[in-house]
Image (tube, rainbow, N blue to C red; front, side):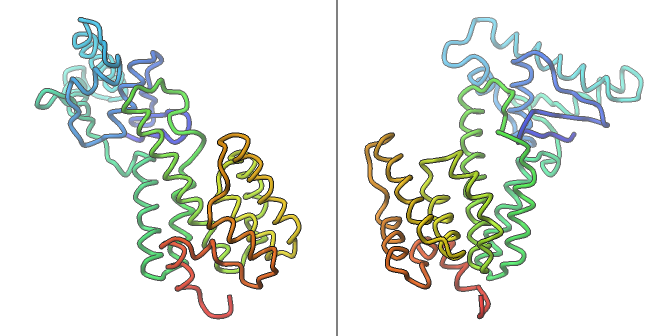
Length: 280
């Protein structure tokens, strides 16, 4: 079964969609898919679907949803009804007081994203920036929009949604760090301009844009970017920019030829800079 949650929800078996139209069965399938190969206990599933105050019929209704999902799976199988029912139960199994979706994690886009992001981080640690950049780019290519955008999320799915979005931003920052460290500020400026517009309080993308602008000869615009972020932070949160970002601003203001105080401010960035070939 192929499952996509990094954008509009999609799930296919044998090339046929098995996504229910009703909200709670969709929610159930999404949660099982994100934990493919793992047993999810019935109480966990009930909490996701109905929260802390489920109806008395919750467990019975959950079993009904599982049967509905199995019928959809059966419809994709070109076998007799008895054999199809058996195979559907092999895909969505009942085990030890819970349910397990026997989908290959490699066919779930969220798992592919996590795997490639982790591979990119390992490559940075090993000093292999080419592999790191490829892994980060391939990981980000899984995304087609906001994770679980068309799924009603309970507590578990909401936590997973937040985790995935934070991981996406971290991976994106890592890829842009690589481009800047390798002397390619022009290649990321347009992307960074979009990112700071969408996330006007995000210091990381603002700092990367400041560095990229400075390195392309636009010192004044880079300084203006700091002031814009500062105004947003004060107006929205009542706080000043971080010490590291203020240090970067001073470096740009003083015309530091290598304003890398921000770029070297995390372990990942230190590893990137240590691996950059001479001449970049």
